[in-house]
Image 1 (tube, rainbow, N blue to C red):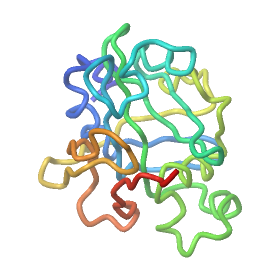
Image 2 (spheres, rainbow, N blue to C red):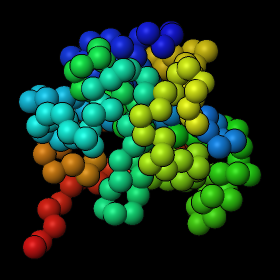
Image 3 (cartoon, helix red, strand yellow):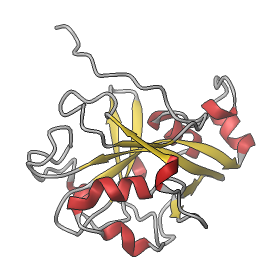
Image 4 (cartoon, rainbow, N blue to C red):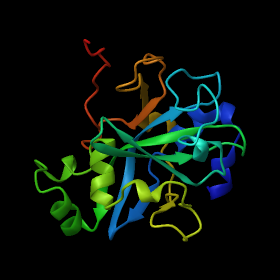
Length: 201
């Protein structure tokens, strides 16, 4: 499975997201095997997507090309990381929610000294970014050609459909029941599901 597969039609973003399970991302001397991801579609198609209302300076990276990284700041505290997918000009991206650190454990532990155990190191999108040593400067860089600070690589054996579970997305105010979160069933590094609750004014 090569990188061209990331540019599959944006209408197939759910299938592309599920297919990213088992892929590896390397940055900052740490390599992570992806165990949980979340799909987001584009203009007018997905109310939970940053691109739902059209092109802006913030979401421009989501419109392509595939294989670039879209990083955004959330709650004024955390960075989250997405891989842009789909054909250029039509927004779609996959949020990297969690993974297993398979190389660079010492660096990962140093960046997350509060982690309860190794399975918790990259359990959650903000934790994953921290462990990789990445921040907003990664936004817009390629993750497939070796020119950026992060590199994603396909697995030697893709995860089988029987290994994958789908369910509602996490922490989104709209379309939260859309089953576009995918994870490797039973994996200890998968984050805990928390349904979005509206904050009181």
